[in-house]
Length: 640
Picture 1 (cartoon, one colour):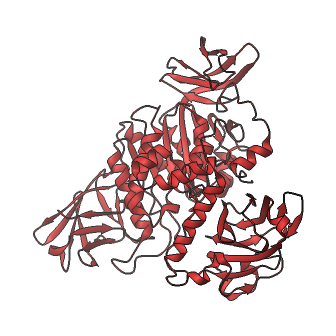
Picture 2: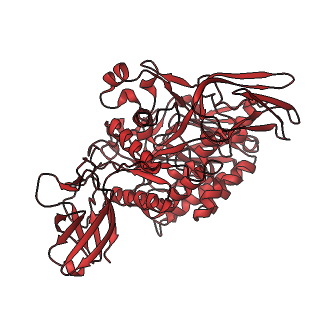
Picture 3: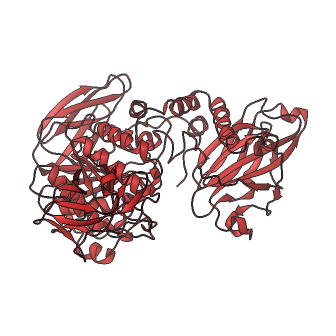
């Protein structure tokens, strides 16, 4: 799939805008709409046109506004169907048939939500023996990013009843959640899946929500500038990357890479994936590699506007011409083409530099070498060859990514994938994301809270938001107090859910895979999501032991838990509880024993402990569960 071209260039190439659909794309054959609450039905017509809509034996009319948008709200309808939804104008009729009324869930996040049933555990059996269910309907939103809210989907969603031919390509966590929940909530289930692997939470949020969290004003204004003046925005972003480099190379500005100065190494002809060059330093390199070439122009050539093509870059680039930023794009699948305004080029030698940033797997400038070219306004094509490179030393801090970056930018996926949903009614949200935000746990809790709050806008005020906590992946806990970025992100998820009031947490740090960030046991993830949904609905179920306090009692620390199911806490494989740390200036392992719904900690320095940590590692070792088999969730809390 190709990412959209830069906005102005894409608009120029696309010609007249396509007519938007009379019925929003989610109102399609086999859809599920939300039960037991007023039902918004909406779409786009000609400005001022009268639209008549019918559903479940009722007919309502609306007049399209100046932008063509129209909406009617049908009375609450109980679960059932099938029905038809029809919208009619003087010139057009659109009907969605075989529509069921039930509970509609938005399933969103990054690659673990995106992971398909066919890729998860026990796939063949689940697809062939456990999938046939006409009352679970699935729709996947086509991947799309945008710098401003899209009025329509990139590709119309297709609702599919669940069967062995359709379920394999759908989100495993989402499907297993719905299948499990339907065992006790026997109504049709509509699943709208909108995910993108590698995405940060910021990409799924509106600018308004990001501004309320704070710290995103400059990024948002830079994106807005890119819509009005892309040349100025690219120049501004180029300066941002320069500042990042300068902060790590004090006193080295004369050899700054965008100037073309310094030491460079000739790159293989045709470039390609740098892991295949036979260069030991690049054999498994993830980071920034700078690429440079030069092109000479006459005075007449330099006066012209031009288009700079640098081909495909895995996976992000910031591109300079004579030290001035001219473009930045994310997505390894995209051929970069950047328009150059008059005055960008100069007579004589022009230096073109590409900062290629790769975060995993292959990296480099690759694809058809003919697409690395400078095309002048008069049609002259000047191939860009004889590239050289220099490797950016790693300093422990990742380079910034452009604020319009597909996956790490601000509001890009909200604009492209969530905004087109409009006021479509949902029963709740299932959110499986956080891996990309690991290392930024201090900002994640407020971001997650704001994201959940804005997903409720236009929905029920108490709409449940279900969050999958990150599974165990990465380093084991061998040293108390060791840095554990994934553990810190899990705790941010816990704190955000606890502060929300209408959110539930599916704890998964016992069912992951330390060597695979995409664990296969999505059936249990779905079951735990369903338990969280049922608990929020007031059902008498537990979701696993949740810490409530840590108090100093004599020479011990007593940690209390709620939501303990099955009759009490259990220490698997021992008469002692492992996985606890007591921390003040440093951390140390604590000896724990179960007393009712508490764990009593003792050991050296217990009386001085300021904090208690549990399961505090990327892949923690612990043995505290309840009698139903659900694990105690990881946490860090203060001792009171």
